[in-house]
Each structure stands twice: as structure tokens, then as C-alpha cells.
Amino acid sequence: MSNNYPKLHNAAWPGIVGKGDDSEPPIELDALLDLTAGAEVNGTKFDGIDLILSEPHVGIDSTPDQLSALAEAVTKRGLEIGSLVAPVWPPLGGGSSMGDEKECAAFLGQVEKACQIGAQLRELGVRPNGVIRIDSACDPGSWAADREKNQRAIADTFNKACDIASKHGERLAAEGEICWGGMHSWRAMAELLELVGRPETLGLQADMAHTLLYLMGYNAPDDALLPADHDWSDKAAFYEQYKKLTDTLRPWTIDFHVAQNDATVFGSGSHDKTGRHCLPDDPNGKLDIAEAAGYWLRDESGELTKTCRHICWDGCMFPNETMLNQETWNKVLSAMVSVRDAHGWQE
Image 1 (cartoon, rainbow, N blue to C red):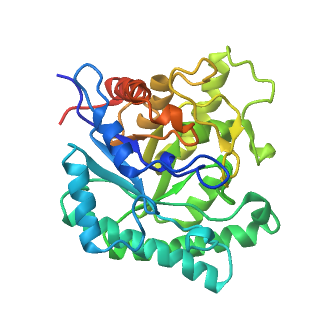
Image 2: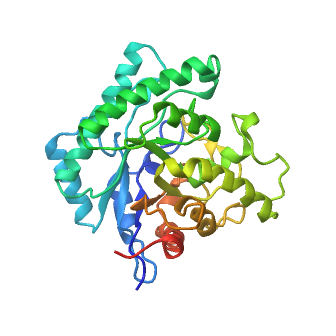
């Protein structure tokens, strides 16, 4: 019998991230739900979708009636809701987690609202698993001006965010991505999680495209694990360093994104440059998706961790033409199935 865990989710935020006035228009949530529900590979379909709590998809100030309508829209397509992205960034009403009292209060206010929404969606029976995703809402350059002070300030804010999450029965996942100060390298990310020291409430959201850039040392050259001229045909050298990365961060990982990357950075719209997401069959992609995913989903002895009860595809900053093509999501789902076939289980 084929594996039915982890559940396979698509992400809705690629319809928003990198879109806007100086790029392409956002893609409506209903369109993304239809594309997700329409994908199928040998009888297997997506189980759910992960959401960003931001207009024009799901407003952070959504009313109970609006959330009920959201739950109905998702369930009628045979899907469930998983992890939620809290809009902690200043342009969306949040604030820097290492900022002044007002900025930190704005950050925590968005976490509070996101946790409330998460709890309401659980009560509606549409969200059986998932976390609230956060980041530091500040850039690496500002963080580097006073590394020790700023890292401790972020940790203090994250600790307060943990108190909020615990109150609502939620867990937080800090997004490991090179564009977030204090989280922009594998070493800084591990240090921050240890400073907070609340693994029962705060863990890591690991994205295969973003964490590949950790190896390259973008925004943190001293923490590079691969040389700039790394020969990508040398798989043994790659996996030797990849294992160092995953052995450090896997114990913290509670949310996982399947993705492909060509070892370059990219940004569009107002989004800072970060790990480029490629389609799973991109000839320039550097990852064997199923093999590399195993380094995150299995422990050092090769046993399944079963920590992530769902995994999510993240494909930010693709052109709308690509995202509105149903075949795109069939290819994505096929990659997701390959991960579950290799590293899943049956319940």
C-alpha cells in the first residue's frame, strides 16, 4: 500500500510574493485552489494548501464569517489547510523583531492575530496540522551593524511570540532564508533557535531552495560550506557538506518545503533577492529532490523522523503564465509524490 503521510500541500503565497505594481498582478486564491485541486498524478492528488495571511488572499483581520467561507472554499475542493504565514513585515502592519518597542509590538500583534486565525481554522475542522510561520522581518545588513545585540533582540521578541503561540495551542516555525537578518546563514539560524531555546514551541521551517543557498554562503560568506567554484557533478562532496547542514538544522525542523534551486539568487517585485525557486524538472536545478529531501526527513541513522505531518511545495516568483498552467502543478505534484514514496509512511 502506498504511503499516505506526510500529506502533500501546495502553497498559495507564490500568487502574491514577488507580484504587485512593479511586477505582475497577484493571482487570486480561488484560482490557486482550483489549480491545486486539479493536479493529479496516477490517481494521487494534493491533500491541502498552506496560506499567507495577507490580502488579496486571506486578510489578517478576517472575520469569523470570512474564515468560515474560506474553510468551505477549501473543503469543497477536497483540500485542507496546513501552515499559515504571519505577515510580520512592516509594509503589512508588522515591524522589525529587533526594532524599538513599537516595532516589536507590531510584530507580536501580527503573530497574535495569526495564531487566533490558526485556532479558529482548527475549530472549523479544516486545519488538522501545521504551524505559524514567522521570520525576523529585518534585513541582514541592518542586523550586521551590531550582531550580538540584534540577535539577542530577535530572540527576545521570538520568546514573546512563543508565549503567544502557546496560549493559542500553536507552534511557530522560523523561516530559514538568506534575506532575513539573523536567519540568513545556517550558523546564525541555529544560534537564534538555541538562544530562544523553546523547541516545544519554536522550530525551523526549512525550504530546500533557500537552504541550498546556506551552503553557498550568500549574505554570509564566512559560513559557506561549498566553494564558489564547486563542481556540481561531484555529488559526494555536495552531500558531505549537505549532511553537515542538515545534521545541524534537522533537529529543529518542524515545517518542510520541497523545492528546486539552481544555486542562484533572485528577487521580483519588492521581494529581496533570495533562493531561486525552479520548476522540479528545470535542467539547471542542482538538487535531486527526493534524495536531498531525505537528509531533512530522516535522522542521522536513516530513520524517518515523522516530525512533519505534511510537506509543502514552495515555488515563489514564477511568472503568472507558468503558475496558471495546470501542467505546472502536475509536475510539482509528481515531485512531491517522489518524496513521499521515498520518505513517507502509512497510517
